[in-house]
Image 1 (cartoon, helix red, strand yellow):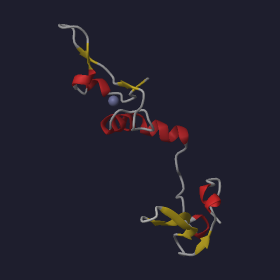
Image 2 (cartoon, protein in one colour; image 1 turned 180 degrees about the vertical axis):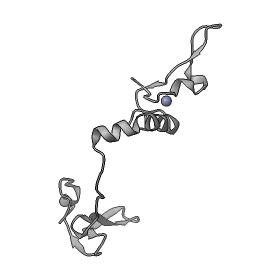
Image 3 (cartoon, rainbow, N blue to C red; image 1 turned 120 degrees about the horizontal axis):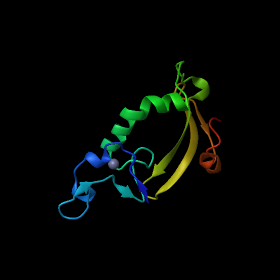
Image 4 (cartoon, protein in one colour; image 1 turned 90 degrees about the vertical axis):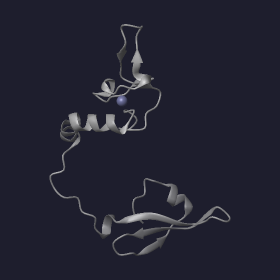
Length: 120
Ligand SMILES: [Zn+2]
């Protein structure tokens, strides 16, 4: 179990956040085994936004601010694709597709599943 990391989570007054005996009620941060926001650390989009608004600038500086544009060129524009047959529920024709040149190159299913490959 872990607590939502939203800095204002306890201020959202919902029934599931109420704790304490009659006369001494309070709201507290949500606690769950799993969350679906902020990479599994926030209970809601609101709490995710609160975290990003408070810590986003520090986080970007910590993990590496982009100072130059990142470019999508022919060299790094390869994505994986395949055809799916809904009748037989099978995948076929696995291939690389270059999103800039539209060039296609066949690949095996094993290559498709190997995520260490980023281009043909
Ligand atoms: Zn929360």
